[in-house]
Image (cartoon, rainbow, N blue to C red):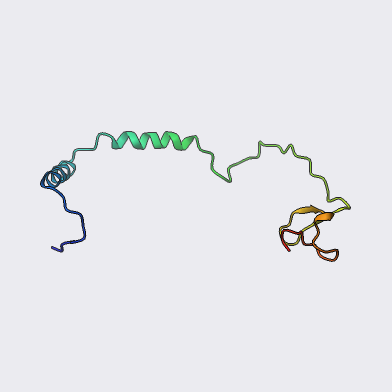
Length: 98
């Protein structure tokens, strides 16, 4: 059997407790808390709404206005910016992206 010399050493009491725990689990006894944890997780999982869920019953309440004459769409960040934010007169880059 290989020995891991880097592993922390355990006292005799810890070794006895581990062996008792291993015997109890192999003898067929179930851990008393294992069933309740699974049930709680299942109940909690039902309350989550996952991304990509069906949102067909939702309606949009935001009014979208078209781009105004003094605005431009930046080719770097694709945000609609005011004309004063243009880096130079011939480009469609805002000051942040330039």
